[in-house]
Amino acid sequence: MKISMALQYAGNPREAADQLTELEAAGLDQVWVAEAYGFDAVSLMGYIAARTERLEIAAGILNVFSRTPGALLQTAAGLDNVSGGRAVLGLGASGPQVIEGFHGMPYDRPLGRTREVVEILRMGLRREPLVYEGKHFTLPLPADQGVGLGKPLKLLTRPERADLPIWIAALGDANVALTAEIADGWLPIFFSPEKARSVWGETLAKGAAKRSPDLGTLEISAGGLVAIGEDVKGMLDFVRPYAALYIGGMGAKGRNFYNQLFTHYGYEKEAHAIQELYLAGKKKEAEALVPVEFLEEISLVGPASYVKERIEAFRAAGVTSLQVVPGSDDPVGLIGQLKEWTSA
Image (tube, rainbow, N blue to C red; front, side, top):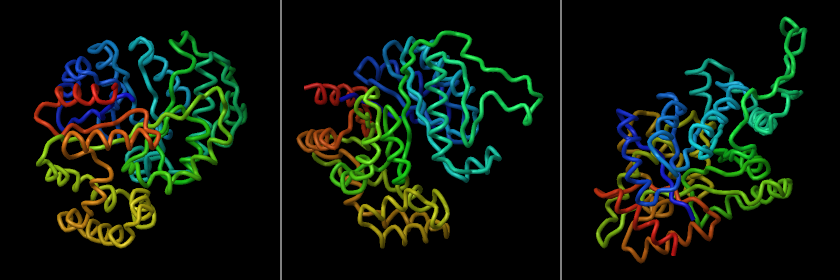
């Protein structure tokens, strides 16, 4: 099992990235770099590549709307080259607030778009001429849609790897099934090892039934806050604002995938109440309603023996990359401890 983490930065991404050299030395295997509507992920990933030696550098995530498949191909191949074959391309549909609000593009048929982007990317990484006819993308562009001078082109430079890993962030049933069918890895959120099978089991199996044997087993990166000690349960409260934001505020009523997942986990009443309060601006009240049981399910917080049990629960649920948020004044030491336990 690998140890991974999302790069946490509130002010200066470069300073956060500089800390990765120590974490890498302690045993961190993989870092996920977010984009959303902040700084672009690609610039920071290139910087991290120059500062590290073995760390896998993953986009977590690039959306499939704001860059063309060709641009994503160039980006993925370029990052893999400057990192010496350490890039991971995380893709996702993001959400209508970002896509339509920040990028000004219609949030139209994200699943079909994701499938076509992945197909074109794999074609391009094999350095095949980009000839593709889909519902969202046609390459080259037909003559009646442009000046008629487009021609099939293959990537000019040779990629580091033709099989550069492509991961997909997914929650909804159709998207998870698509991920299990076509992606190298899956990025879920709020992953409960005990409930994952009941929520996603049939959907994952449906997608896996169509999966090419060439892709191998689906990788999964999931985890949560990690705090080790006899009296650390209070650390769970630090997860409350994050959970309430997603459950209550990430999306309108009826279009919040995180709220729907929370409902599937058995917290229907709380899901409704948290969303009502959060959208009304009562964030603290919403945070207070996040059940401690849920926070425990998605975290690894407690004595060493308990955290070891949680690691094994995530492993048993199919997690291949334990994504952690260090709840410690010594994150380097914590990563070193986790690496020792997961490698045993």
